[in-house]
Structures are given as C-alpha cells and as structure tokens.
Length: 193
Image 1 (cartoon, rainbow, N blue to C red):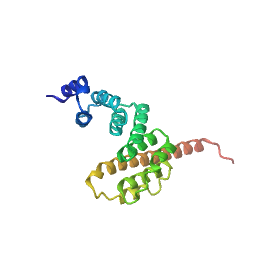
Image 2: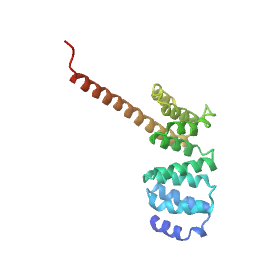
Image 3: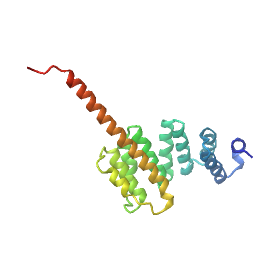
Image 4: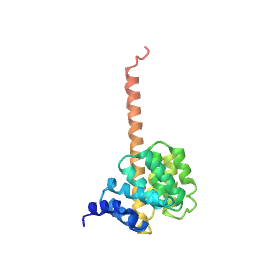
C-alpha cells in the first residue's frame, strides 16, 4: 500500500492503532517528506496522550518544516516539558528560538542541559549558548573539535554545525553590509578644508 494511502487510512483508524503504531507511521511519513499528512496523525496521538513528549517533538519538527513557527515553539516547549531528556528536541527548540531572535529563551532551554560536559549533546548545547550570547569568537573551533563517537550523534552534530555556520556567515555579511553603508555615507560627507 502506498504511504499516502496508508497515512489516510491511519488518520481514519487512529483510534484503533497503538501509540507506537501511529509513531511508526508518522516517522515513515516524515522520512518521505510528507509533513501535511503527518500533522493530523500527531495531533490525534497527542489528543490521546498529551504527555507523549516524542509526539510533541515530532509535531514541532513538522510545524517548523511548513513554517508554523509559533505553533512549533509551543510544541517544542511541550516536548521538553513532558520529556526533558529528549536531547534532540531541546537542541532543535533552541535553534528555532535563536532563529526567531529569542536568544535569552534559547539559553534558558539549554542551560539545564549542559550538565554533561563529556557528551556531544552537552557540547552542542554549549555551542548554541555561545551563539545565542553573540559570542561568535571560537564557535568554528568548537565545532571542529566535536568528536562523533556514537554514529547516532552524527545528525545532531551536522545539524548544529550547519546552523552555526549559517549564522556566522550571516553575521559576517551583516558586518560587511554595515561597513559598506557606513563607508558610503562617510564618503558623501564633505570634508573640512
């Protein structure tokens, strides 16, 4: 059966499926790039079990993909409230907050998780805290020093790395644009004789 049809059937039969079965269908849909189809399943699952942090997390990811950023903010918040150990939710939530310019809130989300300094997740949290603080100085070096011991950490490291590099690039472009605008204005000023 085609995945889209399977998901449509799953929405109609959501009450007959276990939470694990629904999550499996959702993950399959997410891997196929079908956020519009997975959102109703996730909402159904959350309606059934509001304390399912994983479902809130997956809903937040799908909402982010289609640009529902305020809803994603709320869903990420629920995810870490119900499942505080869900590292990827915490990290992606902080990245969303940084992208929205809510840096102090991003730092609060990450602060409590830096307790594991020897973990890749703890290192990623420290990097994002520096980014949220505007401390861009050693971010590239910190990223390069991340060592992936567990292959399961690789996607998180790549995601954080790409996010941070884009922010560094944007900051450099903003700085260059500011300098260019300043020099353009300065050059137009009459110099005293």
